[in-house]
Image 1 (cartoon, rainbow, N blue to C red):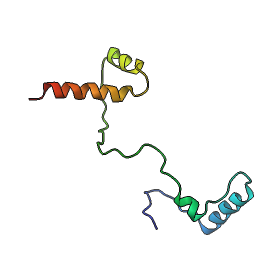
Image 2 (tube, rainbow, N blue to C red; image 1 turned 180 degrees about the horizontal axis):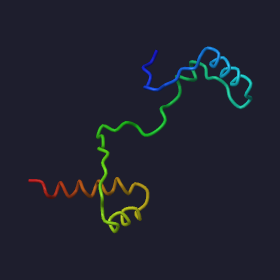
Image 3 (spheres, helix red, strand yellow; image 1 turned 90 degrees about the vertical axis):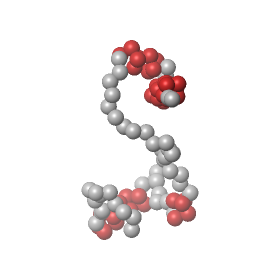
Image 4 (cartoon, rainbow, N blue to C red; image 1 turned 120 degrees about the horizontal axis):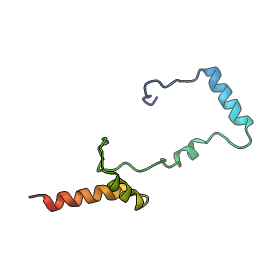
Length: 91
């Protein structure tokens, strides 16, 4: 059995039966076969080798508005500008 996150609630056998009966009764869905389940792709963004650090920081309104105005990916561009600064100021 896979390791469960704290607070995970496992359904009782009766609840599991009711869930499966609901799946069978719903014409818009079905339970995946083992083969179909193996073919599923992970959802979401792939794990990065260069993990970011989550922190709270304050910038001037002008800086934030400028980067946001550049559209989707503005935080990545802000990070790139800071990396360029580091590269040009490193010894």
